[in-house]
Image (cartoon, rainbow, N blue to C red; front, side):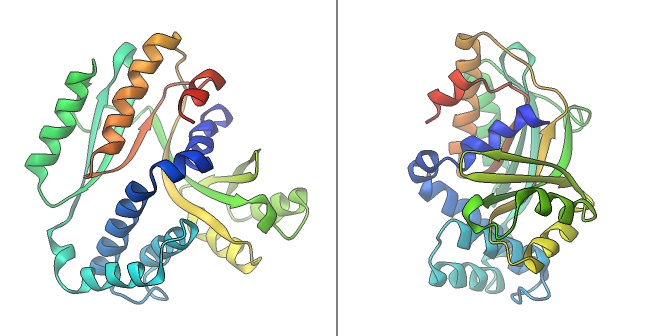
Length: 249
């Protein structure tokens, strides 16, 4: 799993965040709206909303933007959103899992299929990639916000479902079991550690290394999917070498 952690490295890299700030906000606003619609506007009794608001704050989203997104969910705008997933393959058999939130499924599936086709991939049937990815909790924490020795923190989190803790540049990445996501979040809050981003991700069981030119084509497909307004998350099992990561800066 450690090799796949570079995915999080890219996601939280300052340059990448600045470049895609508007897209990040769009995704978070959708998540807040859907969460508010699903289980109410009170973050104390709505864990999904609490998590979405936490991520919004981690991305420095203004308070009034957060409040408007919550109101949208209560005002009926959230009723049109549906959550759907798509599975397919990029060049050389790289598995790609796409999570979407959309108000028009026909538009979304047409767009996702078109991106796969134009960039050398193909859309598959749902369930075909079930064996490729495991669902894991992933917490991104700024090292400067950790108020204790990292070794002690690791010991504190083990009973909450911690599977792996990785330090990458100025970030500490905490990986947990799917079942331990909630208890780990509660433990981090109890320890007064500020979480920059927290989410359940689909982590590839094994990654696949490709020649750089083919890998670049796969990354183009992934980036096109990520740029689609209906797409919330894209997961894949391409091995991200340092050379590829430098291309994404």
